[in-house]
Length: 355
Image (tube, rainbow, N blue to C red; front, top):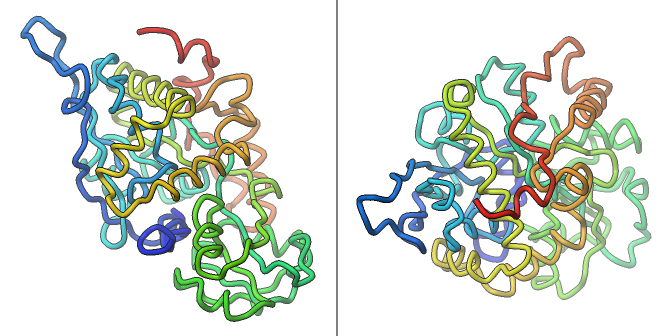
């Protein structure tokens, strides 16, 4: 999963860690049945209980899901949703999903393809982020104006980089394994060496570096430079998708509607984020949401015409071909099994209408 998890305190040492390290899935203290529009009579429709696992502690990057709880959207779709936060340590998202600890999990496209290679029966049903927030961060006034300028310079990256974005950087810019340095989710080595760079998430590490280092770093979003995997996806077991597509559809639709609502007025969702994660500051949430919007992480690509959550066969194929070319995947891998388009691509108006 990722590693950008290392923030000031808890927030910044997480994202790359998520992608290729383990996650600790803690039970969230918020669920749809404890928020607005609670069932008050026996005549109302019984809600289907659903658990959704996130890839880290509650934050703006999870805002739409919390918003769907806070505003009663999930209940409108007949769902009683509990969010279970990810965090440092213990089982991976795939383990939690396949073991039945959660019904849906927050994943990413490249991991979904890798799951097919490993014979893991999970599938991506929606992609909330059109762009992966993964970035490379450099020092200002160091002569680094493009990613190409980092050739030969020390770069702090996590182990997950080796099977995700780093092969692309090697192929495109001539980066080498020799210039890699181990990233331990602490910006101190980067701050101490003005010639170095480090990995991060646009919504987190730059914020922490500015606070700790007293300067605004140079940030390169890898999604704008060929690393075009989907992120913050919704994953489910293939068995659930086959046996209960109506439940999957309702969860996807309600989650997407929650994201539209969050982008319009994030306050209800933010209150629940801070309830689940008391260490999350208003300043950090505001920064994270600002960067999601500034970089078009949610409303770009396929989502511009097809709505939040959108995916396309062409996008999956193009990304797979890039990763085959740099040796991450074998060309005969049936990557099409990693996703389905049947639950998305309805257009913005469909998600905003009343249930």
